[in-house]
Image (cartoon, rainbow, N blue to C red; front, side):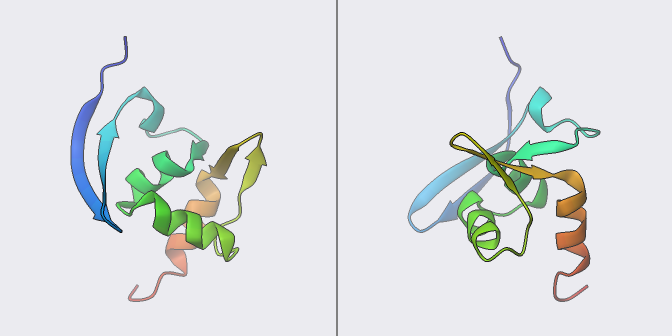
Length: 83
């Protein structure tokens, strides 16, 4: 059984997302799902999906899953406004 710990709540477009800490979001991982990457960034998954769709964040689609490399997240943050 996974040890999931709620970290934060995020409300977007009427939906409430629970950001969790799990072995899947451990530092040192190189590839993340959109939900995991959004939790790391502290944004809603829909916001990250929109950035992927606009090609602001490079991603790879494997089946129905969209995967994002840690390096892509770092580059996305480097170009974030207000930095």
